[in-house]
Image 1 (tube, rainbow, N blue to C red):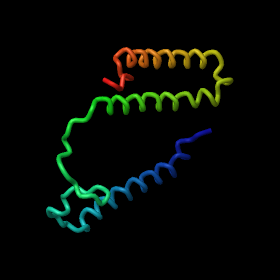
Image 2: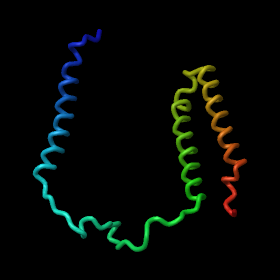
Image 3: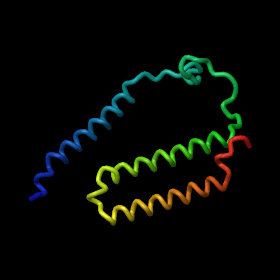
Image 4: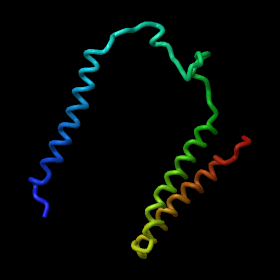
Length: 121
């Protein structure tokens, strides 16, 4: 039986951990160096000097590829629990997966009709 008193060590440990984080952040902010300047504020990427403007137009194909990747990748993650425990879920789990797949396929059909897979345009 779970008594409220049995959660006291967990609550104390959580308070100590959160307190340590906040105290560490405050102390490092107060004691750390306060140096500024043009060199420190300059952008730095992998040892390569920056050139040009970062605000240039990027093709929408790039963003569509990223969004579709996330769509398909996350969809596979949701299939994993069903694949591991499909016998225990029974018919109710199977119907839930069919509903999920149907919603996913509707989104796939929408993307297909919008021409997101036509890379030559």
